[in-house]
Structure formats: structure tokens, C-alpha cells
Image (cartoon, rainbow, N blue to C red; front, side):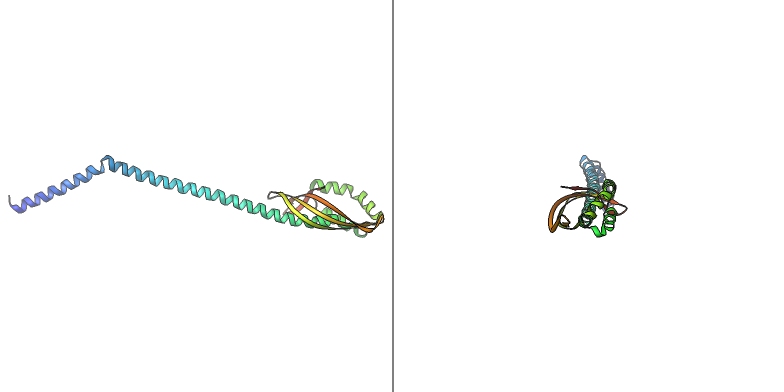
Length: 193
């Protein structure tokens, strides 16, 4: 055998040895553990990504829900304040319009009760030539959801009638439950305290 052939055989044997060593290393416990570690790591990253997405979606939904509730509270509070003025401002010369305005802003139990008592109240107010002017001093939301808001209002009401020529100041605390009906905020319950 010549020297060139021996070198070629050595190189060929050396390449075979390298291939055998690589195959042996791939099937060694270390390389198998490394492959499992990579797979487990990739799985853990995927699970964390899904968990982060679910968490972000949940908190995004909660934030959106809270923003809707806050917007409902602001809207209902503004309507309640205007309605409190309507409710506490009466002029016996325009009594029918005053009562129509009150009924237009009411719903449910309160509307029914007010409609039932309006005839007696109208007679009393007209006989005494009553005039009152309400003004909201302060208002605060007690509780709120997207469709129902409870508002506490402090109202000053200046009242004149035949029994008292001088104006009298009445101060009232009103708890008003506003309900969203057909896209509008209406008073469903009014408690004078």
C-alpha cells in the first residue's frame, strides 16, 4: 500500500469515527435531556403567552366595564340633578306643565305613585298659590351599574304660599334611583329624607 492510500484510508476512518461519535452523542442521555429541556422550555413559553393573553383580555374587559359604569354614573347623576330641580320647582299657575315634566322624567314605582297622588296635590298647591324653586346644593353617586344608579342629592327649596308671604327655605336630602329605560335615564324611586 502506498502512503497516499494509507492517508486516504486514515481520513476515511477519521470521518467515520466523527460520524459515529456524533451519532453516539445524539443518543447520549445528555443530548436527550437537552432536547427535552428545549421542548419543555418552548411549551412553558407558549403556556405563559396564552396565560398573559387571557389575563390581559380579562383585565381589559374589567377596565372597559368599569369605564361604562363610570360613564353611566356621570350621566345619571347629571340627569338626577336636573330632575331634582324639576321635582322641587312648582308654580301653581303652571301646575299642569310642572306635573307633566315630573311624569316625563319618571318610571316604574315612582311614576305610578306620583300619577296617583297628583290630583290631590294639584288641588292643594293651586288653593295655596304655592310657588317653589329648587336648587341642587350637592350631589353624590351612592352606587352604580350600567343601567341603575343611586344618587344622593341635597336640595334647597325656596317656598312661598298664601300661608307664608315671606319665602321659606326648605332643605331636603333626596335619594334618587335612576334607571336606564330605552336609552334615557329616568327616576324609578325617589325618597325624601
